[in-house]
Image (cartoon, rainbow, N blue to C red; front, top):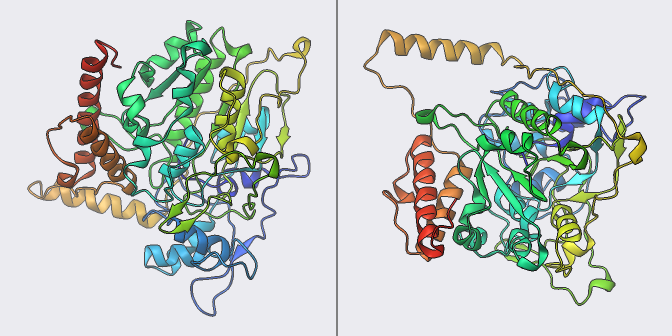
Length: 478
């Protein structure tokens, strides 16, 4: 599960006469942020970095504006027309608003585009929540965010019951593994913090693939931020981290699976947690509880702001990879992140009772394969190398000027990057869990001032939780 990109932004321009996905015609537009200006039309010139700095708005209220044109989500005029104006407000720069309409092409996003066309693309996968990362990632694991539509509800990751806890029932005789490249919001979950045997460093993934040692369910997390001290860099594709670094991660995962003996029994899903405030032209659907599910609970509602989780978030890229998928497969069945929970429960869990009606009504994808056993593919799709879509010239000039200044004046310290909102939200969630377990860290989340501070805190918190887990379970840490 990657970060914060919309379907149109990443894959919309793959649409063609012989590949008729629900993509872009090229004339889709949004009203301008400048009064009297011309509509801003989608373009094919997205860059790997620098287009989306500052980070576009993707909180609940921002998404309301992007979809409905107003903060209250009141239906009225044409939907999906508020992206440019919202980003202009967030960036405090009217002309910057137009960047939200920039999209990639097969040439500038070659890895994901190749996998989509050579295997299967889902062009109606919607994020579960019209809001930010953490609620959407919780829906991917629990079909619920414990009533949160924001990044700020620090208790939500800790208290929500996840599908991993269900799998852990010994009666299932199934297992899971969570591969991480650093911080993981899942480690803030109280159950998983106490039972960490499912966590593994991503560095082990390829060797596990080559040994045929993958469990029934594997979840891979990208690295969410740079860790300069350790020479590690973000692969999540969250703006404004390099998209090509995420392409390299996707390529690495595919090649590891393709080279291993479990290739023919594995279905790989590449999906994004939410749209990140970036333009998409397809309105998200309203969600209505089926009377057949009247006995199932509702997802815990949000009280501030009020929201009943009765409509989906914006569409995101989703690509399925399997030797049982014919090239050029287009899947238009609507899915959302609850589909992950529902599919895993259906395939691997004896407990078939859904967490809530959202999970019960989510489409599952165990039947998307369209080739018979005798037709299983033996070809090896070779992925192109990731490319760097060049940033605008002014961004290059600014970077060169900063380097020249630092070289000419070595006593001037380099600019200190602030922590991302996601990093701070993860840090606060981890701190909440640490407090529940009476575990201490070297510094408090309130003492984080830089991106490296946040990374150091999260690493320290993970180490502290691992040590606490070993104490609680007599050696059951990561």
